[in-house]
Length: 181
Image 1 (cartoon, one colour):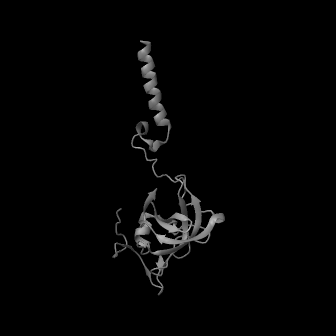
Image 2 (tube, helix red, strand yellow; image 1 turned 90 degrees about the vertical axis):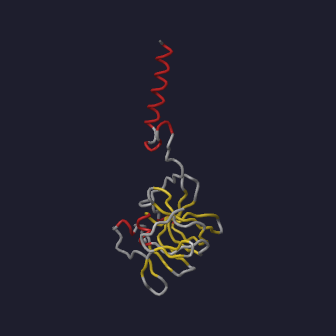
Image 3 (cartoon, helix red, strand yellow; image 1 turned 180 degrees about the horizontal axis):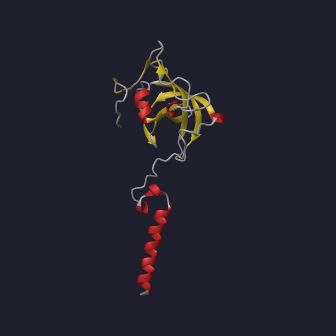
C-alpha cells in the first residue's frame, strides 16, 4: 500500500509541477512553445540608449518570429541581425518590397534576445536596392501600428508615392497577400 501511495504522490507532483511551469509549456513539456522565444517586447521594448544603424543584405524574407511579430534577417559586417518590422497584419498591408540579397539600411534599437540572436526594433527601414523607405516607429520608438503615433505610416518610394506589398520570387504581392516559408 505504501508503494502505491508513493507512486500516486510522485505522479501527482510531476503533473502539478508541469502545471506550475510556463502555461504554454504543455503537459509535461510536450507541445512546448518555448522554441524560438526571444524574451523581447517588440511593441514597448524600444530603448533609445541602443539606437543605431545597421546595413546589410537580406538573407531571409519577413516571417513570423514571435507573438505575431515579423522580422527578416540581414547579413551585416558584424554578423546576422534580425530586423523586426511589426505585426504580420501591419507588415502584409503596409510593408515595403524586399527580395533576397537586397541592400538594406535600418535604424532602430538594438537588442539581444534570449535566443542569442541580435535584433533591431526598427524605426526606419530603407531598401537601397529599390529606393523604398518605411517609417515603422516615431523618433521616440512608438510603433505606427499602435495608433498612438502621429507620424506618417507606410512607405514612400523615391518618387514620393505611397504603396504596399512585398516581393517574393521576383513577383509583387499586393497588400494583404500571404507569405509562406
